[in-house]
Length: 400
Image (cartoon, rainbow, N blue to C red; front, side, top):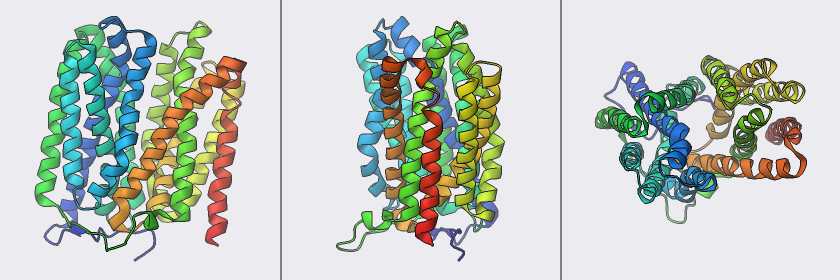
């Protein structure tokens, strides 16, 4: 087996053709899109709903937004052991069920029920995200792991573009309660699709040997560097996505300017994610991840000099291209040498560190902006990607 290939050794797929497997992978991809469509649609209206309907303070709305990540971080490592015992489909379905329960909770205008909904949605994200990556790694055809990850990443990217537009549009024209009602019905579709796949694809349950530790599987240089660089990336993303809208508001452009910026960035990344995944399969993931880093560095350096539209929109377009290379490249680099029996646990560790970056980014950037003003926000970004490039190159030296 080529070192970049996965054969899905823990799958019982002897009765399935390659066409069947591709079909079921697409069921999972569409379910992933719908899951994150609901998540992003609800996230886009959660703060205005809490402040305008429930009349909470902005600080409370901020805590509500962070609650999802806190819950996901706390429980995700435990879910990893569940995945590696063959319960990945159960995790996906349970994640969708908790998202459905959260959507029902959001429908009721009560702050206590809203908090309960955020906790349930945090559990859902903690269950769904690592399992969706781990199971795609298991089912991907030989030589197409990067491409398959690219398609899955594209589904996530499309949801990030479409979700906020759907959420804010429906809330403006139909109201918050009706919007949450629509998301309830959307949540049902991925549950049905995933159950259909579960009936056809059986994951063998793996029991660790006595004295065997999952940590032994993730003591891998490429996995560690991929996790570390992803955490640094999410620190930058969490900071810029939180405070760039506020910066545009302070200079008189309005927060909608960032909406255009984010839409351009998301749209430009979608097709590149698929291309980037294919190139990671053919040329190796390290070079593709480095290419993504280099493009990030160029774009964020440009943003230092041209932070305002229309030039900022060009930088957003370039950042989207960088994201398209970075995501499949760094994920394949991190997971390619992980034992199939430990992919669930390792993906939990990976995404837990990514979520930590999303939590720390706004805190770090907020502290810097409080002390030095918005002007410090842009020069902080390029050094992050210089460090990431150095870490990835150091991993190559260690391999050699």
